[in-house]
Amino acid sequence: MSAATRLARIREQLSPGRIRQSRSIVLSLAIGAIGGVGFSALNLPLAWMLGPLVVNLIAAMRGVQVRIPESFRQFFLGVLGLVLGGQVTPGLFSEIGHWMTSAAVLIVGLAVATTVGSMWYRRCGMTRTSAWFSSAPGAMTAMILMGEKAGGDPRQVAIAQSLRALLVVLTLPPLFVWWAHDPDLVRSHMAPDGLWLILLLPLIIAVAKRLRLPTPGLLGPMLVAAALGGTGLVQFHPANWAVSIMLWVLGSAIGARFYGLTLSQLRRHIVHAGVATLLTLAVLGVTALAMHWLLGVPLPVALLASAPGGIGEMAILAVTLDIDPLFVTFHHLLRLTGLILVAPYCLAFMEHRFRGRDSITDKPDHPTG
View (cartoon, rainbow, N blue to C red):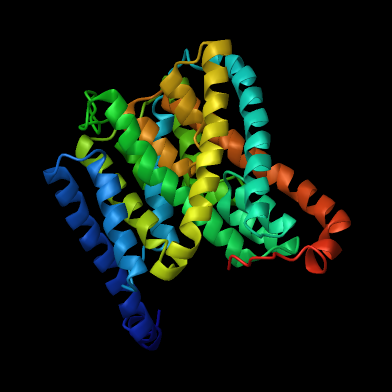
């Protein structure tokens, strides 16, 4: 490499844009640490996830430039994937066949929850297309892009989906911790093992993206760790402090993701999104009860497996609460992939039957965006 090339790279690293980006990352992690320490001092549940999340959320909505790059978030999501895969033992694969019935119950619950949610958003004035993609309980990015392609309002869909994810992640963890009567849940009594897998994360995530796996940062490392654990070669177990760092970064990333959402937008949409989220939680709560009563799935496991939150956030909750993380993650992966697979067919149906009506005679009477 010539001296001129090295100098050009140094100048690129020191460009104002890169400096601002680095400052935003440091700021997000710093205030996230303050939130984690504060929540820990107050003995609040899941302090190192919810503390950074809440503080970054407040900063983001006040216009503070907080940011966690996607590549950085993907790496720590990969650590979570290794933690989940490390739960797999050689005898676990025989249990997966028993999960198909609960998976079928979840699919029915998802269909009902989406229908009920879209009916509510229609009453709020959304077009049929925007209402459907706003109410789908998961796969937020895919729903925004597909909803726009089908003729929906991407801003309405983005705000509705973002608020659903936010409300779920802020309300469910404290409820589960209260249920467990134990605020200090990030713990492990096993010696750290398999830490060398962390060095392979960039390669594993790159291969998972090449294979087009859903949520590659989580699923790729999880499958690798599960294969190693299932064959008895090595089981990944991080130290407690490493889990806290993972929660700190991921919590900060969740909160910083809402940069650009103003308080006025939040006030305008929070009631509609809150009611929609309650309806979705009610339907999926009944789904969880059906899993419990009909199939004997423990109620906390069924409730968390059915919760309409982000797969990363729900996986974190399952790991830290030790609520059958593999069962929970399997069902959330099913929810994610099911919605992504079904959405294109719904998109094609809406384009064929409703696009003209949505754009002409089916405009919202009371615009929500």
